[in-house]
Length: 291
Image 1 (cartoon, one colour):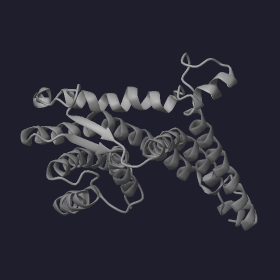
Image 2 (cartoon, rainbow, N blue to C red):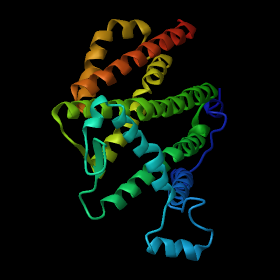
Image 3 (cartoon, rainbow, N blue to C red):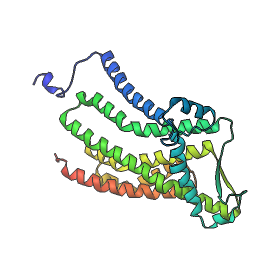
Image 4 (cartoon, rainbow, N blue to C red):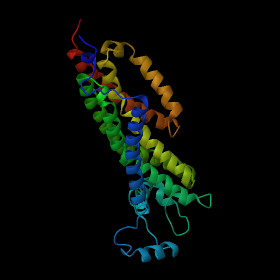
């Protein structure tokens, strides 16, 4: 068999710097998408401003500027916080001025709100850009892969992407609100007012979403390791107690909300994902030809 027949079918002989240049071009495309989404989030909300660029500029300097990112935060993030506060039974015991909300977000620096909006815009733009980035990286490595490797990449990469977004969805709708309700409940017991800084709130919010997204990659990691022969279902079963203990320690260390209750919630979620990955691993192992 000749040397050419050993190569992947789409393989191309290119100098090293050509590979670097192609990688740079593909990453630049993803960066352009990121920049477009980021800029779009700072456009005025439709229906709030006219399409006249002069009036938009005047609105910015007269403090009547209402960008899309502000609408997203107030409608989809702050609303989640307020809903969580209202669900706490003792929330009605709080009266702060004319407000009955037991929770608030404050800025402790002059440019805190602006930095908050920039960071939030970057996170949203990144979430939108991830599929484009994955596609460009896939197109870059595609020529170096054999047909069976291509099938594995297509299968696992897109499943991993979907699971990542499902994890973030659960983190947004269930995990983060649960953390808020637990924290507010204990604040109510002691009569505390829950004030969060802009940086502290955003850091915890983002960390919770991404932590949930990466945690949901557990079944894919287990399936991939089984596919390449690195682990077997029997190995996973025998070492389950050690895996659980190690993950519990890891969660306690990297948990975005390092409390006992939140650590247990994350750990219970991991157990469910691990058992799902174990079932998937067994089905994959059955289909692997035995020597």
